[in-house]
Amino acid sequence: MTKNVFRIQPASGIPIYVQLIEQVKHAVESCLLMPGDQLPGIRTLSQQLVISPNTVVKAYTELDREGVIALRHGAGAFVADRGAAPDRAEDVPLARGLVKDLVKKLRRHGWSDDEIRRFVDAELTFEEVRR
Amino acid sequence: MIIETHDLVKMYRRSVAVDGLNLAVPEGSITGFLGPNGSGKTTTIKMLLGLVRPTSGEGFVFSEPIAEDRASVAIRSRTAYVSEDKRLYSYMTARQILDFTRPLYPNWSRRRERELLLRFNLPLDRKFSGFSKGMRTKLALVLALARSAPLLILDEPSEGLDPIATEHMLVAVIQAAAEGATVFFSTHQISQVERVADRVIILQSGRLVLEGSLEDLRARYRRIHLAFPMRAPVEEMQLDGVCKASSQGHVVSLLADGHLEEITGHAHAMGAISVTVEPVGLRELFLESVDEPCSTGVPACVEVEEEPHDLSSHDPS
Image (cartoon, rainbow over all chains, first blue to last red; front, side):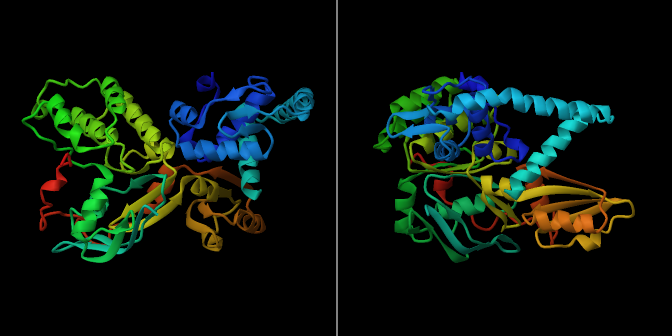
């Protein structure tokens, strides 16, 4: 299933491990991955996505540090079972609502969808560097 | 470090092929080795393998000095090599070459051999002399990957391969790395490096122009576009972190290595009405780092003077 869920864009200039982290988080938020689900092993995922195993290690380590997944030595990587996860799911409609309002407002000011998308991307890219 | 060189130089009669190269390739990494034609990639690889003698400087593979014959044998016994020309015994069939090569390597993996042969779909009973460029590359890859060597040095391993075979090659490389091998490969396909490599080394005229972890480079470099209401004050934008600056009319385009806050802050202070920041892919970084024109008209690498000895044509031996 991960083969179709995770999509890596190596040419985008965004670090691949960052792309992978975002996509795992997104899969968890949208319930494609549930607490306790096992993630593919490092070797398997690196071969599926045709990316370096070291990149997968880096992403998994970071996700483990953030508590999104749990790395169990010898057993593999599992989606963390944490109280915050359901709360987060409830937050999603709120976040979507905020974005919806913003998009509506920008459209009213005459910005096209492509332009709006670029604004958001530019802002995120800039923030990512600032962090 | 599995590979390390210090001020490595190779001079041919009229030209410098490799010009003071300092390389460091960490164990277990996948390193993509990029550079325009004639930038010294193959000469560097041949020096690492003892096939070409350095003019000066020094290098180590597995901590063994590359310029000493005995040490070089030890290096080659642990290094699988796919040479640029992929030349093998032309009078043998693929099957004969495999049968001949297999017993030479104690760690030969029959499983890996079978897997690769299946994926590559090679005509095993055809003589090597009748092989296309792509088939030659495939067979050279099978020989290199099946011996389970701790270091793979691949000189253009995707040469002549179709997209499917290229994908199989990359997966095989990743598999080897996942099992602990260090991989060092040269290529002209930037997209391959972007996808599978941990580190990149870019040569231009025998010199190193960009080197580092790909994820670091992706995190560091940004393209910044600034629009001004007047003619762009490009000369005012030579700040710390600005690698390249160009302007066209009222727009300035910068390639920045960090320092984004200062650069965009300064731009606003100069009256920029629009500031956009975008990530930079490896293709762009590559083109930016090698676009300095060559200082001489002579190609940097002309291998005429020193004919590499027999070992250069692959090494089943």
